[in-house]
Length: 258
Image (cartoon, rainbow, N blue to C red):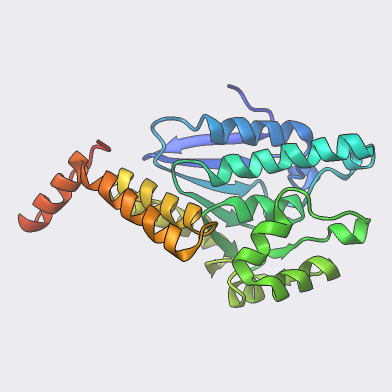
């Protein structure tokens, strides 16, 4: 599928996904939401990891398209929220790791996209926030659920109820982003992480990610049972035999994803 508002390039099994509406600071209109949903539901098969960023230096995604939001009714607003949530679910449930490279403003829907990614790296110039209450609405693409699970209820409410932004240093301090880099290093560092992940068994990476993601919504006991089950499943794969044999033979493992 050809995308109007995305640029997708796969190199060395890493998909670089650039949200490309620079004239609108990469704001999420309905078309872009549909394209992101489709992409992460149909990520190219050769991709073993993905990096998501925004076009230009000013913004990762500056938020939703306000002109579209201004036309909402009670009925269409619910549909807008459902589409945004489906987009974020497609990113979060993508079978390969997705790394957000936050290169500027990540506000509203932009932060919600970053929250749906599995790891968040940020530029030193990044600004992050959920300012929806300043417009008289609330976060609708999952922000009220993912942010408190990441940074805790108190910090999440402080950000959501005030509508204020945090800079990259504060985002790192509260655990909103994993690491912070100079702007010129951001994409290369995100790629380095993707490359490091790709050294490992792809099935092991997939099941480990599933254990963490699904386990967070369970009791500790249920999460441990899930881990036990997935440990058993992955241990029956050819990759495990290859990984253990390579370790004993003191050589690099060659994983095939089987």
